[in-house]
Amino acid sequence: MKKIVVIVCLLLVCSLTTQARKIIFYSTGDHVSKVMDLPNDENFEVLTDDGKSYHANLGILHKQFSLFWIPVFNYDTEKYVLYTDTKIDGYDYTYAELDTSEIKTLQKVYGYKIPDTPKLPFWDRIGGKLVWLAIIIALIVYRYKQKDEENIDTTSTQQEEIS
Image (cartoon, rainbow, N blue to C red):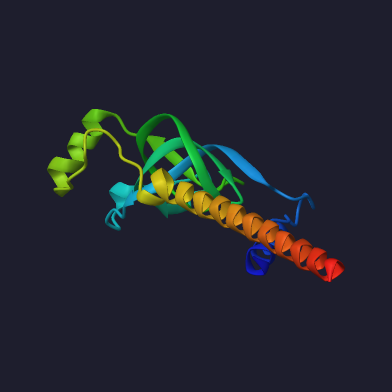
């Protein structure tokens, strides 16, 4: 259990931001999950106002609630997007939504197999929930063992008092 306490403390310490100087316990809002890398050609470049270009990949845009960067649940409609994860103009990522005709073009021209309905990666869909479930179970087991030790201690003290 000491390891869990140390890990939680490390998460608290690591979650300090340098700008705001406060602890971030949760996040919510838009999240892009990577689906696949796209080829490095000019068709998949994002141009900024200052003339710089950044490579874009295929991802799924959805809204996500997370605690300590571990996804708890996803909500809202999932959409395919072209996105770049390079920080541009202060944003962590930039994206452009794709409609079904653009998805069909990607499939025809590049031969990609893209499902009609977006499906989130395992980590975003289930992985985070498994981690939180494991943490909760570990805390319950720890608490149960603590109560057992307390009962054993009180029983042994009572027996010593009787003798």
